[in-house]
Image (cartoon, rainbow, N blue to C red; front, side, top):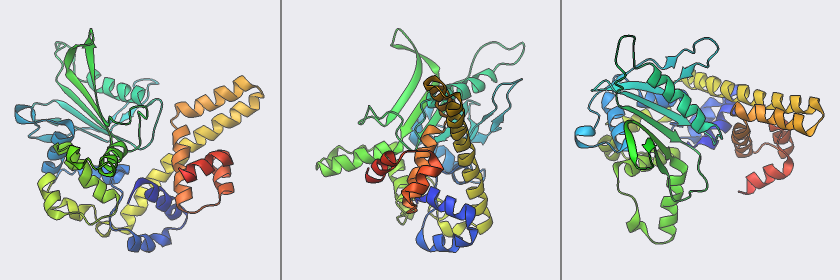
Length: 332
C-alpha cells in the first residue's frame, strides 16, 4: 500500500469503519510509514536486529563505525516554558551511548529543515548535565522523506548535513542524513527506461529502499531478501492480515486527526486573511497556515481524495484549493 492509497483508505475508514474488510481484500501490505506502523516495524524492542540493520544500511555505517546495539530512549522531550515539545518518531542510543534519531516526513514542507534543526538541538541540549564538560557524543539523525524535499536536485536522493568550517573542515560529532525515497524510485525507473540498469546503485541503502518499494507497491515480499536485509519476520510483519481491526482503526484515527488538525490551521489562516480584507492580510493568513506545515498537507489530502474518486467540487470545498490546481494534480 502506498501513501495515497493509505490516505484514501484512512479517510474512508474514519467515517465508515465497517469498510475495513473491503480493504483487507484489496491490499496485501500495510503502509509502512504511517506513524504507528513505522514504530511497530522499526522500533520493536523484541527485534533489535531489525533496527540495527536498517540504521547501518541507511546511514552507510560499516566496520568499526557500525551500530551493534540499539536501545530505545524517551520519544517525547517536553518543552520548557512556552517552547514546543519535540516528539521523535524513534529515538535511542547505540552501543557507545550515542543518540540516534529517526524521523519520517510524509510531505514536502518549506520549514522541514528548520524543524529538524530544532529537534536536533533538543537532543544536543540534553547531553550535558551540570558540572559536566561540553564533550558531546556523536549524534546521528536520519530523516526518511516520503515525498521530494529538494525537487531542484532530481538526481540526488541522499543528502548529508554537517557543521563545516570554511566549507571543508567538518564537525564530526553531528551527522544529519536525509533520504528522499520517491526520488530514489524515480531515479531507478529512469535508469531502466534508458537501458542503464548496470548503473543502478548497489549499496545496502539502495537494497533496503527496494525492499520497501515492494511493500509500497503491494508486492509479495521476498522472505529470503527480507531476512537478509532485516530479519526473518519482516515479510510477515508488513502483511495486512497481521494487524487487528482495533489496531488499524486506531492508526486511522491518529493519522487523520493529525491531518485534520493541520488542515484546520491552514483554513483558519485563510479565514483570518480574508477577514483582514487586504492583500497583506491574506498573505499573513496563508503564511500562518504554511508555518503550521499545512499547505503541503492539503495537497496530500487532495491526492487521497482523487484516489478515492471524490468529485473535484468536493475536493475544492474540503481543501480550499482551486479547480485548476486540482485538475493539474489529477493529470500529473
